[in-house]
Length: 353
Ligand code: SAH
Ligand code: SF4
Image (cartoon, helix red, strand yellow):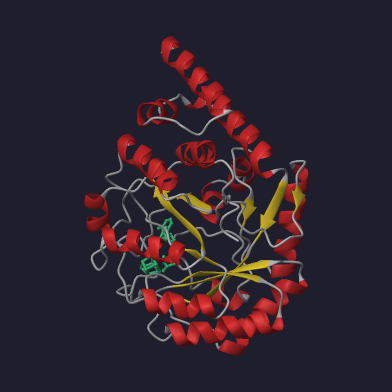
């Protein structure tokens, strides 16, 4: 054990200057005992400071539809879940929500939904160009898988970024959890998005049933291989409306380590302190911000719809209005000695914009 800690220190020392970590080194970091893990978080925090500075970028999250044709095993809004009410915001509600977010000081919004057949590429394009013509917001879309031509239509309407997590790097585990998706298709979508000029975000859940330390290390290496602009990592939180209700779920410590190692590997990518992290622990997002993260995505969805968009249980800030959330999160960020960015928070990878 003594010997392993020496190795952890040496890996951290090396990671201050280089993101070239081997799978074995990543596994050693993942297996470092919780009470000795601070060195990993401090190293990730130092790399974060050097690579992306002290500014925290806020993205207002607009959950515009909870209809979904897919049935990912872990997800509370999977199509076959008959115990939730479904909603879809109108174009006007979406526009007003985006305008409100901008008036609260957001420079960027993330539009997220299930795979809702109503929102075709043409309708999404129309939604995005409408928001673009009324605001100066940077727009990220996170609405699942489309074809090359569909992603192209959406990009040409003005979308800046796209979020599509690969969820796990294990093809076998992916196929088990996604009865109606294909791992290679998911990865192909990420390549298409990059080719079309989107700033691309992907990521995974920590602690999916069947995940091993090797898979978790491969997840992190896949983030690096994809050379992403953004990487979203959060714990898997078992949802009682799914077949995985009785599963264990991801832990905060493993999620924090994954965020920290992602920072060591990806250097200047944008890495959110995810809402799922905050749902697992009241200080989860602050801890992530001190372990490599530099983005927070507060919910700006109109309050009456939030309860229906529960991918996982105990979602935070269900009843807080967007103005309150904005103030609350600013206080938390400043409390950590950091500042809220007043810029769009585009990718820092120079070849992307
Ligand atoms: N439908 C789109 C976007 C919405 S889902 C898509 O699937 O890409 C957004 C993310 O929520 C998913 O990528 C998944 O990583 C996460 N998620 C879903 N169910 C979850 C759960 N039970 N616990 C934690 N995260 C979950
Ligand atoms: Fe639908 Fe996304 Fe949930 Fe899968 S993760 S069921 S695609 S909303």
